Length: 99
Image (cartoon, rainbow, N blue to C red; front, side, top):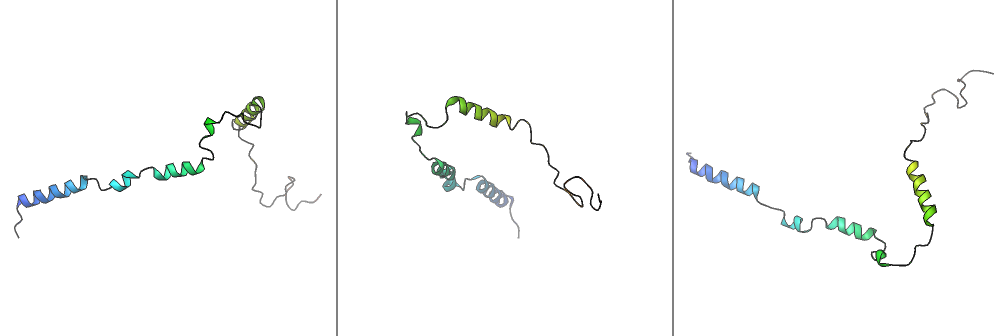
């Protein structure tokens, strides 16, 4: 049952060499295909940049104002609303009180 140091060294080198080898050539060859496919499916018109026809819809001033209003809406958060109302009334008077 004597195992020589040379046998242990060769076995260790083989194990370490196998750990460093690349085992994913098939995965690496197709890396990013799912993202490119999803992007292709979400694009309505891939040649839209080549079209010189003007866009119909809002004029520039209305679009700018709409975008400015949209951006301003995120600068201040909406006021918090207290939705927990245990045993009370919405009008602010306590439960069980009479007029």
